[in-house]
Length: 320
Ligand code: CA
Image (cartoon, rainbow, N blue to C red; front, side, top):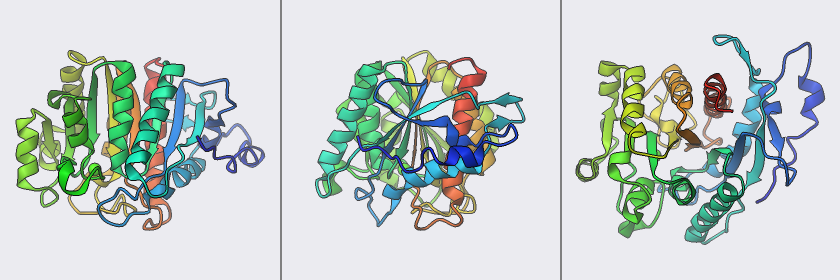
């Protein structure tokens, strides 16, 4: 793995002041030995995108965006300042061989999980293609995996026409047997963002589908509660995959596939907090942010906030 060293540690002196801790100080560069409860890994891969994407730059931007926040959660009256997230750096990608990139992601993460089985991974893409090798590594080492995917899209395109891309990760997981259709829940699907054949494929596979209209009719907290109730009976562990384009374009201008009628950021942040409190939720990825398209790092800042809500939920529930 290729370490990101230049955001440490000079900011420490600048940002620790008068009892306020900046959230970037939760990140602790891996020293090769000690590992905290949470482990952050960057997967800077976006050549696998169907349309042009600069999402490979997102891991660095999201790390930097943590400095926008303090560690104090006023609603819970919990300060995360004593928590640590071990930053394992980025997995080095091959320049031209995209299948090799996926192999490197899967083998690096599987090795990490075997060596440090108690670490809860926070994975930063990259485009959504990374979720296929990431969840494969999870399934190899942690048993039957349930996946809760926040996304405007199914990401169930076939693998024959264009190879593994950001349109195929969940097809790849199903076809490889890494996960089962009944263990996949897709939340935030939108009109005019998907094709009928893939919707039919999703139904045939038994995937649980929640559209944006469903969210407004049933409410996000109820959907999350039902999703956890369904999965906890069947799976050993639950992985959350957040495609930032689940958000309305007003909240996530830095996504390559922006659109209207999506989720608001508060609903996403509360959903992550709710999920993170469940004892079987043990992994998170955040994908599809192209910092070159973003406005004032708005989308990377949502991602950083998602990380904090995830850590907060786990701490609140006593999982770390
Ligand atoms: Ca996606």
